[in-house]
Length: 263
Image 1 (cartoon, rainbow, N blue to C red):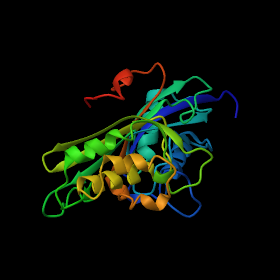
Image 2 (cartoon, rainbow, N blue to C red):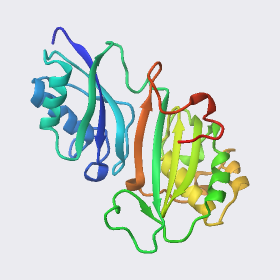
Image 3 (cartoon, rainbow, N blue to C red):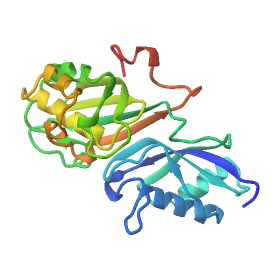
Image 4 (cartoon, helix red, strand yellow):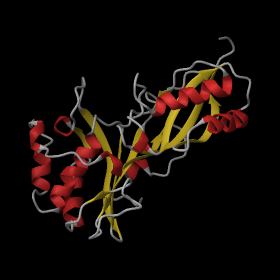
């Protein structure tokens, strides 16, 4: 194709019906349906690059993706055309032509995730695919104390289930708060390891139950067996809220993210 341009888009999706973001040969994935919609709208066979590979069942409000196209459709028309060809559980929130070298993964400076824990005595029905139902009352103060130990640059090897060259990451902020019967855990970092957020949430829930304390969580950042992190929170409670980039307005005050943050 000649006359290619790079297009960046923000994508929202319900992860319940997908086997994760990354394309797989025999499974329904977010990348797969996006590429099919682009082909239907433009006739181009493209490869979509995403800012992150969310796991099976994980949702997104602000996933960022990019692709290259020879289409002459202007940005607004291309956005409408793609949405017309997308299934009901995926939508393009915004779309624009950007600099050719834009890379949604490598150019990102932070990813922000939120996890919802539902504390109702009776399991939720309408929110069953959006929150982890934990009936036992959790101590949010204990969860916050444990969360504070994870902020900063650390080796998070004990919090991943995958194999990666480096397991060092920087967590800019990790906040826990209660809204009615819902506990929200919001975390921002430069990048995340495979299942890192869900294993952190499971650890904070253990702290909220009184099984471990902040000192125990701090010890997990030293050379420790992964088996010492017990459990992984269910995928359906997790949502990718936003991906941040240089020189782009952010909802978050980065210089204060290692201190008290008002989300």
